[in-house]
Length: 118
Length: 107
Image (cartoon, rainbow over all chains, first blue to last red; front, side):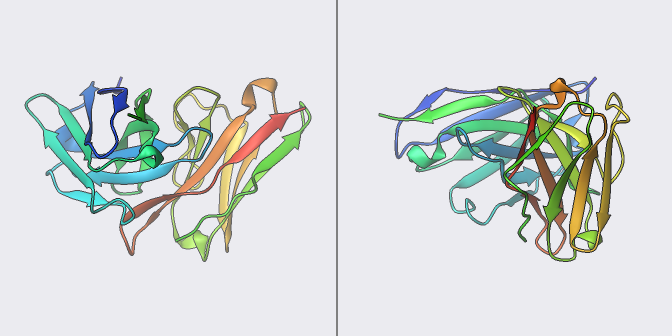
């Protein structure tokens, strides 16, 4: 059974960098693509980007200038960094397994609420 | 690429809910549907237009034609009350795109 779990701070100060990690169990991250998605409180889902099994990232243009994704196969986890955060980046951040051939997201983590506030 | 969903839909128990997802020539894309209950992570309920992942009831079905994809929930139950999102892979940009979501209320 594939399981994903996000981890990271729940509070980030404005202008700083948000960093999250998604740890995967039951599957090797070397075999799939992996996406990050966020959801501001009371709003819809926004795709942030994906990282391929080979470590190549692809980002949503609306966030591209501030986003970095990486893969650590030795720990079977992947990471998200979002720089220069503002209150508008307050959201629940989800990681998900990405079926590269169809673009569907078949397994999701439980989500990590990140609040941007001083 | 833009996906358009109605913000809300209300149906009585036992009735059929049809949730639309509009997009330019959406029939040329693979459409996926997610169910998100209050306070929970989204769950994939329809993959690749009409495939149901393991564990998803047969009451959930999908179709895709022209400029509209549709998620159909037959014999709606109280437990189906949730937000539903459609999503596609825009091959030209290699982006994953979500619709705005539809809140299904079971009366």
